[in-house]
Image (cartoon, rainbow, N blue to C red):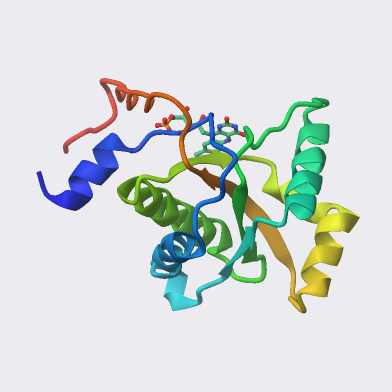
Length: 172
Ligand SMILES: Cc1cc2nc3c(=O)[nH]c(=O)nc-3n(C[C@H](O)[C@H](O)[C@H](O)COP(=O)(O)O)c2cc1C
């Protein structure tokens, strides 16, 4: 099978991680794949925040968990979180950001890095903490959180990719 198709079919979400962070050069390959995503009218409305500072990672985790009234780590112990945000003034911002997430998930799979999309990035960056974080980075504009891509070395057996539903595709 061609390499891309193989990567697509073996990808699955990882929810158990080793604490050691993935080296920067590998993370860079993953984010690079994100930056290559197509975007509406090539507006490239998305940005990626790579968070591996434990203090920031843990605060985002806390805000995320609070949305669900949980005190568990929604990032499943993953040492790195690549948060995708996108500029709300661009009509295709949600689609643009989602495609960045998908490209990064596939790149992670190909490089043997575990990943999982974690929801509620929107709420993280609607919080004062999230807004200040962007401000400190000098990021201006109206950015919405699209998704958190947690990244790390998988712990234990690789999960089995999910079967897709029978009535997924229709031919006309
Ligand atoms: C938009 C979106 C939001 C998701 N949010 C979460 C989440 O908050 N927590 C989680 O554990 N998994 C989350 N996932 C992962 C899905 O549960 C997972 O992709 C799905 O069960 C299919 O499994 P697979 O990724 O192994 O194919 C999310 C996935 C998507 C696409």
